Image 1: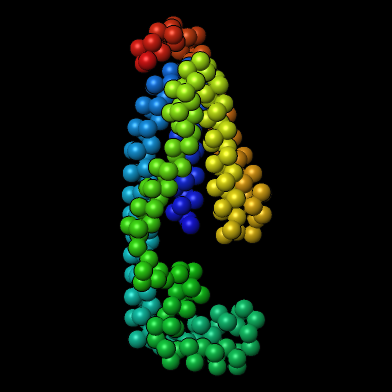
Image 2: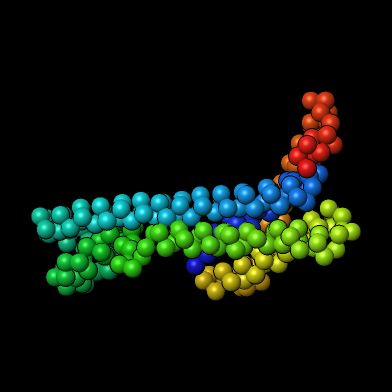
Length: 241
C-alpha cells in the first residue's frame, strides 16, 4: 500500500502541478498535453527506480546490522542477554520476569537477534518475499495510472467539445484531480486511524494547495516576463504552441 499511495499521490500532484503552471502561463492544450505526458513518463521512471534503490539500500543496511548482532550473539551472548534484560526492566518489567523472558528467547538464535534489532536499533527485518524491485514497479505503475487523471480533461473533452475554453478545461482537470485525490485518501484510510472522509479531505487539501501554488507561479512568471524582461508572453506562447 505504501508504494501505491506514494506513487499515486506523487503522480497526481506532479502532473497536476505541470497542468496548473502551464494553464497559469497561458499555454495551449497541445503544449499542456506534451508537457504532461513527457514529464509523467520520466518522473514515473525516476520515482520507481528511486523507490526500488532506496528500499534496497535500506534492506542492505538492516541486514548488515543483523550480521553484526549475530556476531555479538555468538561471541558475547551474556552481554546481549544482559542488555535485553536491562531494556525490558526499563520498560517496567520486573528483573526476575525479564530474566525469565529473555532467557527463553535467547535459546532461539534467529528470534532473539530479530527482537534485538527491533528493541535496540528500531529496525524491522524485511520478510523473505519483500522485493524492492517489485515495490519500485508498483510505484511506477501507480504514478502512471493516477497521473493520467489531471490530463483526462485535456485528452477527451477538447475533441468532444471543441468550443470549451482553456479555463473550462482546467476546471474539468481540477474536478478529475480532486475526485481522484479524495478517492485515494479514502482508500488510504483503510490502513490508518483516520475516517475515510477526513483522509480524503486531507489529500484534497494537499492537492488544492499544489494547484494554487503552481497556477500562481505560472501566472507570476507570465507577468515577470512581460514587465521586467520586456518579453511579449503572447509571442512566447505562439512559439511554444
